[in-house]
Image: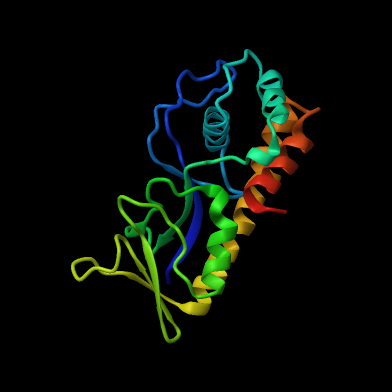
Length: 199
């Protein structure tokens, strides 16, 4: 049965802060869920702070304090979004310029049976026909097969992605923050939910 997951594309943004234990030599997507491990949380933070264009600071308190000083109205862009899976072997990942912060828009578009922005190079596309939804890896193509969902299952899957992302923020990310920056943990978590989930 096909399913979907929220993912973050980990991109190199420069030096790894000394207070991060995880290696940042990764150029792939990681799932964002309540089951995330410490390495995935740290890769999320590395990407978040790099995407925010913050200067390297010696402690997580200083770094996340600088993040909290950013104007929330400017939003945030985190490469990734929703990955669609036929099974563990076949997946359609977000294309370039798709973002985790676009998950609420993807849900709205799927609810309205429209094709959401899923990135480019490749250009994943969703088409609807009757009670079926077709996730194409790169436009609608005669050479590549789509992942086919019953429409209602696709809709439930994208809603679950928002729930999984919130579970990541409230679970492993919050746990990491409480252990290292207890005074900022609640504020950082709430800001991320507003920026990424519009709650």
